[in-house]
Image (cartoon, rainbow, N blue to C red; front, side, top):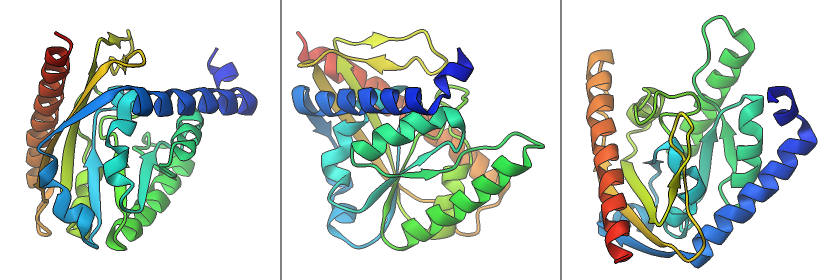
Length: 234
């Protein structure tokens, strides 16, 4: 099954299907936003930024697209074969990919790809672009932010926004990230939290503490989005 999913034609088909679903969710769900004003200065300015949301909300991620599309935006996607169809889908949906993620120890080729992607991401954000990241992907653990996105924020000085996304009614799939899917014409909610910053002189312990704090904040924003979306349905 895994080899079949890595077939180039299968990935192209899956990317096309997912892109269609992403666009359908954007166009048919009535999306509401809470605390959107917190990101407005960045959207109206020239500085770069990072937007973080949980991997399990990828099917609903275009909920924040009309905001981020006001700036040049890329998505950070795993360089693995499994990430290819997601990169294709997001590219078709308006979020071109920078291919990078955490590498396994001893995987030299992937480690080189991660370094190259990290440099590309730094250049992109320093140049005023927005970088969209699922900081618990692609392998988890679920709803735990890895340090990579914080290191980009530390090196660039860019503000970070934590984005909770949910829809109701919806279904949480039996996957590691509890991926959420929703039908057309559901009710949707986006909760924005930020801006947050990583001090330029932050050491590893400080970055780890911020990652834990931001993980809790992003989960809280996601749970609030779930509650508000459910409230719309009544």
